[in-house]
Image (cartoon, rainbow, N blue to C red; front, top):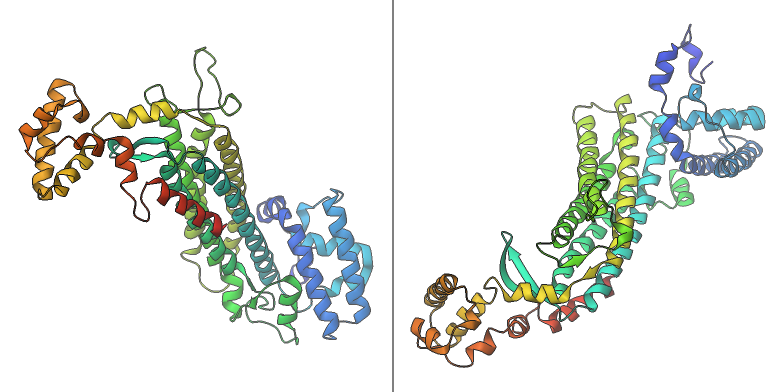
Length: 455
């Protein structure tokens, strides 16, 4: 008979048992569930709600189950429905009647909420650590490329020269924000819902603060209805994961482009590439492509939970069982993507010579040419028009601005002088942008130092 089967006159159908059971996926929560039960039993004994000797027996029994589960010695049963009933059933089999007292003063509704708060809090911390590893790798590569000039793009057209370090630091800023978002998700999960009961708390004199202390929570929930029905903290986590995946996908898209024969900015390591079954020359960036593809999968988990929650009345509803599989999948996907991306990143070979040649073409120094005229008294709008005319002239003759003679340049405006060539050099274009956030090596070094300080 089910532990809740007292008011039922017949057993549930086998189809219902299989459909209703969550043990196939919530067994992942066994450590959180057992640790939560240890804290609950400890508090019940301290409060005199159950005999102290029973509380002690429960705690020791739970510790044994935890050790066996960690050693892979526990067989979780579908008939017991979920991780909570499985643990309680095994506990009662091992220690007898005392095990039946464990559930005093709680419901599976607040018990599963506790497990998920613990899991979300722990995995939010895990994500911050993995992101720190990625950020460290990015900063190390940026440090080695302070003077590696490359073209910057808008609309996928060459725009202005920057450095590889500056480009990479844009992703550093993104991943720093991601780490902060997971910090917020960790904070959102850092409230203890146990004691909410099924929805209306309990008549037992529970010491909720004591349970929170034992489990390392900084606060307890303030409304029992919300305590069992809140999944906002999981949505916060999934939002952080989705934005992180979006940033990874953008980075992967650039690496995929850069590894093409058209760009040749980067060479993927053989260990992080694959070949073709028919074309012997191929070297495919499959790792980057898979990360790009898996981004939609994590988005889907966020949208799925938002959809589950959007029409639910207070308080707990069985729909909420659907929060776990998607959340677990999002966590696993993000861990795999971040880990393999960081490893791939550390093996990349950046083609500095090709990048610099790329920066030299496409009139990336046109803005600096216009700024030169502004410094010589020409209004910017007029300078913009003059340089645009010079670019059109170059296009007709397959030349770069630097290729024009002084006489040709002065034909567009008399303010041009011999120092214009130095002003349009790639080095000058980059170094002159020496304001906070700019690509000048000194500014980039300051940004690297600031990012390392945050880590």
